[in-house]
Every structure is written in structure tokens, then in C-alpha cells.
Image (cartoon, rainbow, N blue to C red; front, side, top):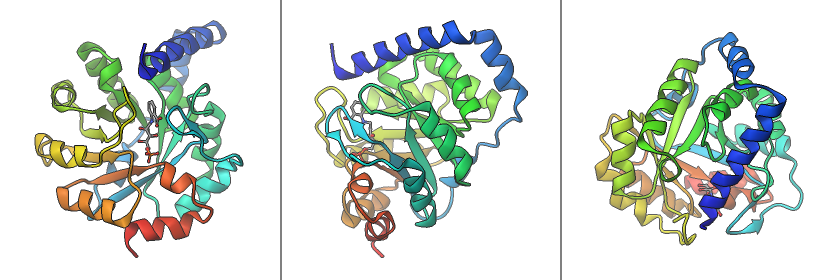
Length: 259
Ligand SMILES: O=C(O)c1ccccc1NCC(=O)[C@H](O)[C@H](O)COP(=O)(O)O
């Protein structure tokens, strides 16, 4: 079983446990009672130049603990002060040591849009994301069927959430576009063996039409990486480790911008 299979399986167990506490019907009722979102996440990626999605994550399966000390609200505010366009918040608890509470508190504390970064395998998690204050959810092609992907994008549309549809190869990009994705994220990390190649985004950019937003995810470590991805036509970069390991987030983000 790959790490991704384990993450997806654990997500299904988490959803089953959550449904014991609150039914899908009641969760759905609560989510639909909220004002419809305005797709703020995708609007934030439409500005001229490259946008920065800065990630709050304490740990990851490939790198272990990234930040012993994890003052998540301080980190999120530092990202916002440094000019981040969006924040990605890991809510997966077992391998990323994330938490729904981190997302809820961060979304309430900042005015830029937040992505719920989790392993979505059920509509239940999309309603949860809405209630936690997220403006976007991650949909990973390799753990969803084409039908699930299409249905979940439609649900996001109904709630006014953006869907960041993650692909790693040409077949997954095709699956995402067929399902109606408006944002494709190409993960430079192979989630089966954890190897990272930012050139993956460069190779796959041409398969995504210009009217669909293109996000390059993972392995961005330098201003040269950002410059290369911008030249390739990326609308945004999603950066985790390089920022999480930096004591001064503002200085590190400026450095990555090439300022
Ligand atoms: O990072 C991992 O080890 C990992 C393992 C299994 C599934 C997903 C994983 N990472 C999620 C991500 O893709 C990153 O958090 C994100 O793109 C930021 O990457 P980085 O800048 O390299 O921290």
C-alpha cells in the first residue's frame, strides 16, 4: 500500500468517525445555511504575475517534523503580512500533524483565502471545509474516480468554494479538465516514491489551457525555481517546506520573490 493509499484510507476512517458525531444530513444543512462563497481563492490567483500560496504544515510523510515549534496563527499572520495571496492549511492529523482547529482559527484570523489541504475522499469533507471557513479544497485525482471528481467540483461550485484539482501526469490532467476543473495543481512530488522535480510542472504546463489556472506545487526552494515556473506560465506556486523551515517567513518569502 502506498503512502497515498494509507492517507486516503485514514481519511475514510476519519469521515466515518465524524459521521458518528454529526450526520451528513445535518452537516450539509449547516453548510448550506452559510452565505455562498465568492470563489475568493481562484480570484486571488488571477492577479498579474505569479501568486504565492504559502503552506502551514508541521510535518509531512516524506520529511517528518518540519517545525518542532508550530505557532500556526503567528505563521499565518506572518504570511499575510509578507504578501502571500492564499494560505494552505494541512488538516490531516496522523502524518502531517494537522488539525481542523488550525484551519478554523487561521481562516478567522486572516483576510486572505485559505485552502483546506487534506485527502478528500467524501463530500462530507467538503461541507466540513465550508464550515471551517475555507475558501478552497484540494481534490487529488489519483485517489478519486472521474465521477467523484466531477461531483465534488460541482459541490464546491454550489458552496462557492474553489477546487484545486491536483494532478501528477498527463492522464490526471485530462481527468481534471474533463471533470470541469478551473484550477489544476501539478504536484512536482511523486506521491508514490516522494521524488521531487519542479520540471514536472514545466513539462505539463502545455496540457492545461490558458483559461484554466495553473499551480505548481512542491519542491519550490529558490527564486530561480519561482522564476523558471513563472516563465513556464504558472499562475501560482504552492510552497511549504522552504517557508516552514525559515525562522523569518517574511524575509524568506521576499527572497523567493527575488526581491
Ligand atoms: O510531502 C509529503 O511528504 C506528501 C506525502 C504524501 C502526500 C502528500 C504530500 N505532500 C503534500 C504536498 O504536496 C506539499 O505539502 C505541498 O505541495 C508543498 O510542498 P513543499 O513545498 O515541498 O513542502
